[in-house]
Image 1 (cartoon, one colour):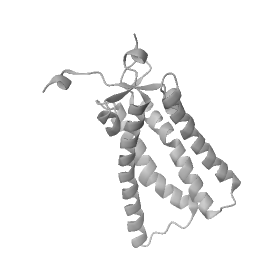
Image 2 (spheres, helix red, strand yellow):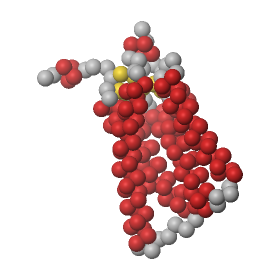
Image 3 (cartoon, one colour):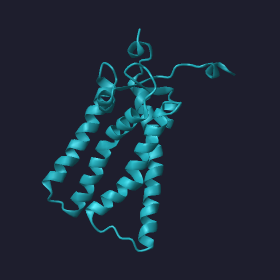
Image 4 (spheres, helix red, strand yellow):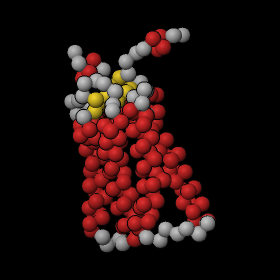
Length: 180
């Protein structure tokens, strides 16, 4: 029995972990908003869609990507939400993630978010942009396909897990789990 069968995770645990992680993303978003306000207060203006998009990337998407990658490649092998739900991220062989694989996984996971942000900033600037509307729809489709794969797929692997060669599994109990 390999990692696939011995540590299979139900979709609700993964979704619950994701919802917990979204609270962390909300904190980052609040920080990003405060940075934008502070920059505006000192006179830095973000008047173009590209500049707003760059600010959102630097203050939100990039820090979240790096944080998740660092946590999943670290000794606990999990983001805060996954730890709370007793989950870890492993490679195809069931080993800890190498930093590069972890970074690729997190970047792929957050790519639809970045595409969505880019599309929204561009659509607000030019509501007639069909190309950016299509980008927005593609980003949403990626998220829906990924969520469907977790909830309905035989192996419960999100799209970013399939591409990055990773899997989310139940944490293996250690001695410290049994200490009362």
